[in-house]
Image (cartoon, rainbow, N blue to C red):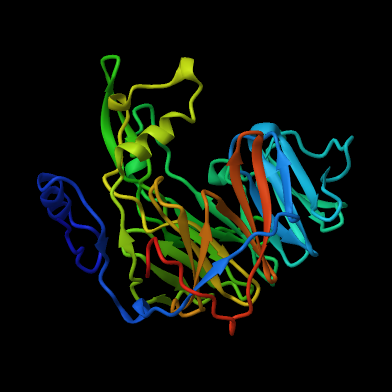
Length: 379
């Protein structure tokens, strides 16, 4: 049995009806103007375009002058890739002293911004790996770090709510804030949807914790200062221009997937055996969010990496134009995750026996139509 989710946020009464009926099965979110679909194009990684690391967690990455800068927070690594030479070179050289614990990276044109919690600053690099500047974490924004910039040099931050001792602050919204390079003025441009939290009893204390697999709103900035946000509850793109004018894109049509026992088991395996919690001790989302990643490119396209259950071997990637209209649907086989989008190429990371496999995948020309896979989700 399946339920069709009505337009807008998923109302609690619909989720409760679905739970009583035995869980949410595959359901189709309501179609808006952005719900039109076209041919599905399959992405085919080339075996030669692969690098293998010992990492265990998915890294962050950005394109930079034909290369990729890849950041592994669990290994304190920021590396320049060379798929032809099969090498990974530390950003700034093997003896650099400019960062200690990098954990986030973004790029504007050929300039790379690397957030480092060890030195509480974001360092700024050329695509060749030369340090040119740094920006401190902003105490007035509770230690927020730079997440984006525009062509005018304005910087953009995400200011998360203060969780408090019991985590109840996580029920508040995070804010997207803009500041000039001088950091002497801060303007709030948009608010993100609050996290989906649950009240958990732990050792005679109550805590509010985010439900696992519930997802987050994601956002980015175009070069003209327009801020776009991928809204997980409505499955649409909204944007705020430099004058503060807000516009909503069309609702996107996507399957809705239930979080299954197999998904929960796969998540628990990410813990070391001696630290693995009980499934019943954790708060789980009922359904997956519509997307797990969002990326923008200089041509103002938005690439949405869509959610999928653990048992599914196909992951869809939607390409949207600046108005939020669906332009292309790409399909990636396997269990890989999209971690960066560059000119004509994607960077995909996939867990492997030896660690983490990085794969450079070429994007077919927009006019190329590949055959539609015979199994898996369709838009």
